[in-house]
Structures are given as structure tokens and as C-alpha cells.
Length: 537
Image (tube, rainbow, N blue to C red; front, side, top):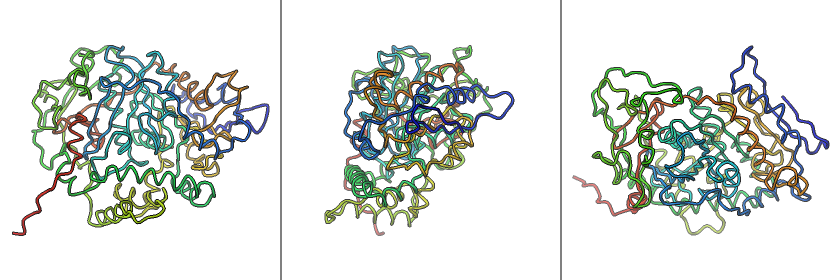
């Protein structure tokens, strides 16, 4: 463990990191250890403005409204459907005329955010400003304009959605280094995704800002500490309930049964193919044209359909499709092809079916939320342990909290990972931070300022004169990714397989399947018709 020095002990940053133990470290391990030892921002420490305690900084962060890092544009807005029928909206900062090897920064917002989350755009701004890098933001399920179209709401275990977005980036820009910035709940999703992906993860480095590592500890703090119990818990619970009410038809299992896609039918529709030539591990090496993904050969075209009618057409748009309107099925390669998309059927279905117990729990918890007789909204902790747990196929709220937390995934992270957690964070108190788990991976460094709240770390005028008009965590993240720029080698790119109905997914991860769609189709899908009742005969 390292602890950076500072002139004032109250400004010291606790730095948690276990240096590599092998004689010849991996380049990524060396970068993490060097950053933990030599970071200027860590050594300078953090001084909170007078009167800015953890609760104040958390509240101010939710009200702060900075301009977006990049404007939204219909030609750079894409809509995807997931294997279970859920969907997301993705916005990209630059068009297809940008260089294919431009670095890509993916931002993952928190529980009460969306693609416009100001705290996320403030962190992205230094990287994507003036087109120096490609910025990507997307809605977690049910957030922003992305209405839920499947009986699943976003939570800490929503790793397949982020995995699908990362997969899309590797397909569209195979020579681009990928970085991920996760904030609050988005930090948990990022940590779990990277940890579960393991050595084959295509992401070059990640930064987690105020991740709620341990949901059980967070719930205890939300239910026992006065300000959290009386302000944060009911306020965020009311926001969550509003999202559920907006998407109530999406949680109707009868409606879902009529609208859900079937990218992995029970019986395979395609015969097995002979083994194919291996796909290269690193696409920045010299490749023949037939090895390159479709997107590299036609960079001026859009891989997925845009929300605009004048947007570039999909690379698959000329092919017949059995999927949703505006989408198309990737071509089936010949037996001796080295094409990018390969047909395959996973051994197990990626979308679990709802048991009778789960159906009952989901219906009961949904009725509580939709009931108009409640004077006070459900708190976040009760709503999470009830309704959200049921959407994630958990009957026990405690099991849901344990299963969707990121504590056990930190030791498995194999890419450079910076986690920033303030000790006075009312949602993730410093005494419950997973320090021992973070030290199990030499790829992880955790920075713990004594103050800063949740997504706060507002700075003094004296600090701004030295580091610029930015928050402390923004300056630290900027320095972190600059340190990782020295890693020139791209991470491995996943082999892409294709399922039915225009869905594609990375090999070994069918739960990350995604297919192109349009905003119009999603709106039609969301509108619930009156279904005929089954005949009693």
C-alpha cells in the first residue's frame, strides 16, 4: 500500500495498490505502479472548500449543470436492441470521417443519469474536446429517452449491456484504443464487466469515480445515517419509481412474450461449419483486407442505423433481414472464409426464463410502485431489494445486493484500473471500501481522499490556479489516462459471431449480443396492444 505525502495531513490521499511481484512485470502493471508512486495530482492531495462536507458535495454534484462534452447529433445517434429485448441509445462525438485509430472514451453514467449526465460530460470533456478523441455515451436501461422494452431495469449486474457497447466499438473501429469511465453505479457496472471479461478484455484502461462497490454496506449507510435516510434514500427511490412508471409496459411479461427477440432459437438453424482460420490477436498488426472487419473496409458508412433518415446506411442494409425493421442479418461466410462474423449457437441460452416465483415477486413489487395510495415513495433500498432484484431474477434482496456488487470482481481485473472513492461519501462510506480486494490485483489502484462526497471533489480557488478550473477527480482521471497512453499495443479484439435476427456477439459471451434497430421501431414495440386471450379449448 502506498500513501502519498502532502503538506497537510488532512489533504493526504490514501493510495491503495499492491505492486507487481513477478520478476518481469507486464507493461500494464508497470504503468499502474508508476502512477501510484509518481502521480502529481495524488501527491498534491485534495483540499475541500470551506464548509463542503460529504453531504454538501453530493447534493451540489447532482445540481451542477455543465455543458456537454459534445453536442448530440441525429447522424451520430444509434439504437441497439439486446438479446432479451432491452434497448439503449448511443451517442458518438465524431462522425465516420474521423480517423479509425482515434482513441475511444466510453462514459457510463450513474443511477439517476442518462446520456446528458453533466458529471460524466465534465470528465469526458478534456479528452473529446476539438475531436482529439472519440467520445461515446449511452443510456442504461430505462434511463433518458430509452424506454424499457424488456422486464429488466439497470443495476450493478448489467454487465452485458456495457459489454455489448464495447463489442460494437471493436467492430466499428478495430484499431481504436478503448477507455471506459464509469461513474457511481456505472463504475460498478464497469468494474464487474472488466473483471468478468478477464484477460481477453479489449479495453485498454478504466477509471471508476465514486463506484458503490458494496451494495450491502451502501444500503446500511443509506438506512442508518440521518441525511442519507431522510434525503438521499427517498429522493433516489422516487426517481427510480418514476423510471419504472414510465416503462410500465416493458415490465409486463405478457407483452414481453409477444415482443422479445429470439437471437438464439432452441434448435440451430445453421449447420456446423469446419474450423476457421484464427483471427489475429491484435488488429494493429499488418492485416490482409479479408481479415479486417466490415467497418474498416467501409469507414465512411455507418455500422448501425442512425436515428436520422439521412444518416449513412448500415453495412448490412443491402441484405435481407428476418429481424426488426431497419436491421439486417450479417452474411454467412463460406466454410473456408476468414470473415469477421461467424454463425454460432451458444450452448446455453443467454436470457433466463422467469420462474413462477420470480413472476409473482415481480408482479407484487410492480403493484406497490404503481399504487397511487402511497403518500411517501418507496426508498431506494426497499425498491432495489424488491422490484429491481426481481427483474434480475433474485428472490432475496440480500442475495441481489451480494451478487451485483463489484467487490469480488476487483481481484479479477486484468487491465489498468483507477478507482476514486472519497472517505466521506454518504453512499459508499470509506470504512467499507474493499481495500483488501483491490490489493489482490496489481492492475488496480484505489485513491481515497478524506473528503469529496459522492461525485463531488469540488476544489478551492488556490487549487484551480495550479491545475485549472476542474474538479479533483477530473484532474486525476486526466492524468491517469495520459499515463496509459504510453501503452501502444492494442488489447485483444474478440472474435465476433452472429446469431439469428441480425444479432452479433463476442465469442464466449452470448449475453452481450446486440442488434441494430431504430427509434421508430422501439416506439412501436413499446406501445402495448390488447392481446387476444388464449382459447380455453
